[in-house]
Image 1 (cartoon, rainbow, N blue to C red):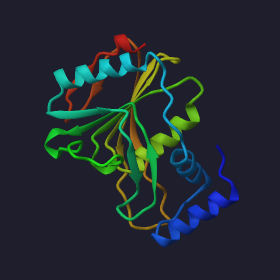
Image 2: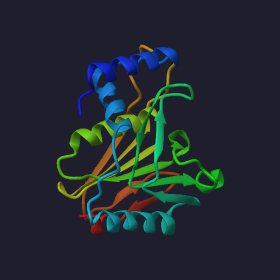
Image 3: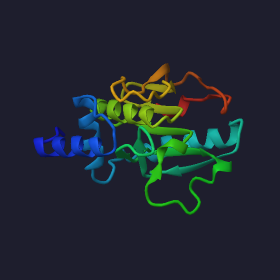
Image 4: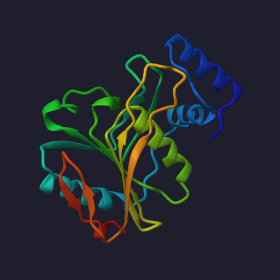
Length: 200
């Protein structure tokens, strides 16, 4: 979806009010597309893939985590910045944070440990925008399952935020991709190799 002039003007007005610079067209499109999106589309087999990941993280992860499926997130660069909305297939948080207990309908993404998405065919542009929004919100890990390509990827280490509104946006600095069937190391705090055999 491409933003109309009216949407773009509204976004810039909102950004100015909060002292946040909408830096480029891609970020504008991310904000519009993700804010105006309807209910998430899900592959009928997506639930099985996500369940496989959840089971391994819960059994083998090196720390206690909580998980929610299809939980709505508010993703923003900072506490007072405009936000975009996303609905990942799974959201992991440190259990001690009690992020999901008594939470409002839309959770703040900055307290999330990892998001998991099962990519849909033809959804490359949407995934790119999502990934950028996850990094902007400072989510440490983004796990992407691409059955169509038979690949599983872990994006990590988002760049450190800076106060300069004209600076480039945050982005993930590390990417580890494996073909399905090969183990994918999940670093600390998870600390185990994800078995991707059943993710193809």
